[in-house]
Length: 386
Image (cartoon, rainbow, N blue to C red; front, side, top):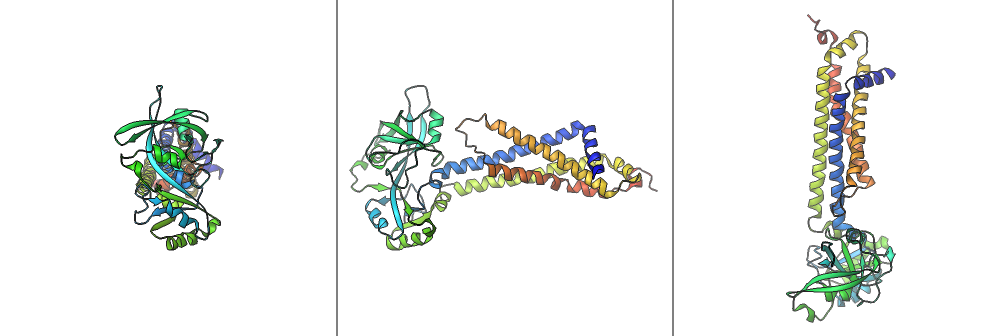
């Protein structure tokens, strides 16, 4: 085994520039694949983060709205019917809208998802700093970590919500009482307020203030036994009626553009890996053609085909691994320069899967060159064949 390793690394040292170029190409492909994976995770997380972390097993929509949160309407009177269903523990109304954070200083306005929740009930995020929301009509807010990071708000600060009421622009001051973890919704950082406060400050038309019943977009349901969610979901749809009940995963996968977005990015990642196979295979094939005479000489002096093939495989694996390591390190350093607004999220699982795939494509791409080495005839390679 020592002879193939010696031959592989001796040639690498002898042709440092050529193999460095190959490693850099592999590094660039690695960076591209890792960033596509991180972009897919970032965009996906921006759409699903709040729903994925919701403290309830089921989400209730209005029937026949194709699981569209914006189109769904669930009246307050329907909550009592949902609560009476066997297996249901707690229910909480959730309303969603878009608003803008306005600032008196030089900070740019920030578009946010304004989410109305019922204090203490499913839908309200946990406050990792500060406390939970108080009364249902209090002018308080919990901000997610993305808001805190982007504009520097914290517990005890006052934020200003800019909202369109009819045709007029109104400003509402809210006290930040808590900061949660990342809870983006529809690719926007989130601000959570008590539901009755949300009903008052959310953007709305001139005729919306005279509404009788309090209406939310969806209802979050926590169960007595989370393992029975499918049974309770069927029971809710049967006993309550005019509703559609799904689990959290189904809910966020139904958000507009989520599935198409993830499919597009996955397709780009697979094509990049395929291109990597072709590029690496092409480089090593050219490398093989340039050293046919040397291979013929080695065979002529007694080197076995197995030794030559193993030397080529060791060389391919070493150069590919060096390129992947360089690309992964470069991706990590480059990610530190991106601002928080860029939807790039590196997860251990995504990076590990990308690195493993890239470590495999090197030998796969070099199989053709190894096969070509096995076919080299010593006399023909040295020009001595009659």
